[in-house]
Length: 114
Image (cartoon, rainbow, N blue to C red; front, top):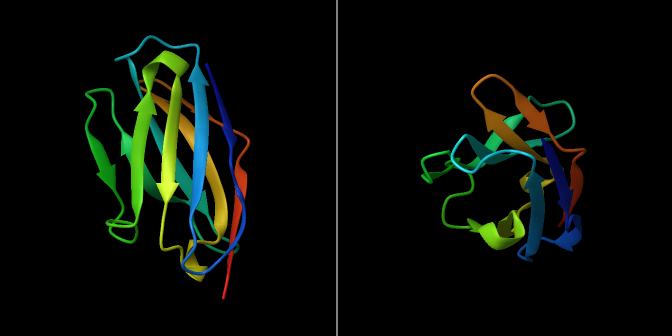
């Protein structure tokens, strides 16, 4: 099982970024895929999740600004991030969440400047 992120970068507050995660090596419906983030000096935080029942959830801090979508044909999960705030600055990780194990990507840096 593998998760590979891309799309991070630097943007000014109010801007947008779109992250991509190519998740592979598992049977659809057996695992969910989620975006987590970790800011310097802070604990990891769940940003959004597409669970194995195809239910999408968002952290309260990103509701209305971030949108999760998928392209099953490409094994890709997208995180569209709009109206970015400086507090969104973090390393964003794509995680394939299976019943017995979670598989983390290498992370992609998102930096939002004021």
